[in-house]
Image 1 (cartoon, rainbow over the protein chains, first blue to last red):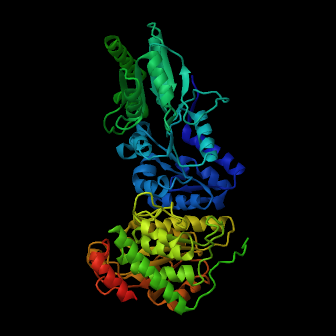
Image 2 (image 1 turned 90 degrees about the vertical axis):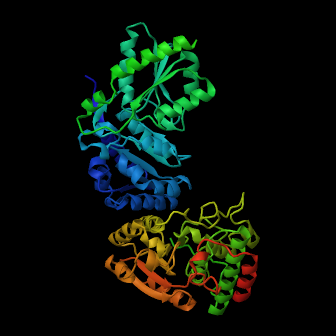
Image 3 (image 1 turned 30 degrees about the horizontal axis):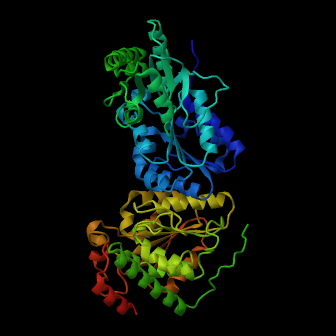
Length: 315
Length: 280
């Protein structure tokens, strides 16, 4: 059995370590610090921990003020509240002046589960990638989360890091080296490339293993950084494998699939298939939702077969 | 911590301050007319407030060291009123007065709404309601690292329709941010109509009191009264302060005073000549 750890829990412990290393780190929250595990930092460093209640607009602009006076604020709340609820504060107050604010959003995607559509952030990648200069990271597991949070703390500029509620599979080893803006090739292949982010990376690896049994050689790319996007890595995959499947636990519009399509169509057009969400979901257990809304290994295999057919007729 | 920086601006008599206020009014009218757009009304109403802050020995700043960590901060939350800020910053020596004529033009550092690309501008604004929260962040940051600076945020009265203002008001008291002062330019006119017609703010002072702020109300065109009120806020411990400055929109130009049309419209050539003559 693979080990399962929730990325939000890792965020909490990494934040605590960073707090010990850097006195300029402050934590800004909105009454969800227990759920995001930021409360661990709060217990250790109460003077550097600021809760603003569920008042996200205020919280986000306060964080901008902290950043403008030399602190490194980590803002934490759920993905739906961290983006849509205070988008204008992020746009005018953080993105435009390019302030050093780190937004860590937990409970992203449909695997937030039983709380239903209001709590399932499936537009956040699109919203945050629309902001020029904003670094957008979707870690694939606990180990990558630790590295991404550290990278955000040590890199000047605004960051958005997208985490999950549920415990998810750990696919990396402790010595993994995360490189901002440079995608990770998890599996080499020459017939097609699956480009996935977040929790879907583990599922993509399973799908690649499944189709390998049919003699299909499938590359798997972990596109952990959505912005700045690794366009070179995408073009290389397009040239070397001639077909791409994108996979994300997010609405297709404006997110990973759109950005990969943009990179491919303007540089080296090849067939692409997309696995992702087309509409809002509903309440339910995470695994049930992933199945009903087409985000399983089987769905990726189906898309892979389809894109290979397109590739055959394309040539 | 409180490294003394000698400002190039020695304390000036109120008479000198009136001269500066008059210059800033000229700048506002000239730059908006030259740009053929911008927001003269709410800039003219704030002239004495900014004159008091920048030249009445309130703010400690040094235009030669813009990023001096211990500088006092002035944050313009009502970002459309940037002409008054640009006028004050130019008079204070942050950039040449001639640069004011680039306002709203391409390649200029003086954007249509306040933006941090202008030397001396602390916060990008233009979307209402954010400055008090931002100021609170700056104030809490200063307290955390034991820096002696104070934070002053200028709000519009129409801006106080924004819910975020009251989120910030609640949290500033919660965090006992006594190094934070809000000043409300109570000119009673917002974009479309009077503040009474658009959205009732009264009882306004009582709202701030209910949120736990130390409140003062002043004539926002009386330089001595504004300076006294600002100095008083330095003595208040444990709670933030607000000064409601009763002002006249378009102050100093008879046909602009109390006229919502000049909230977001510049004077034309003839109007400019008449306006500058009135200001003297």
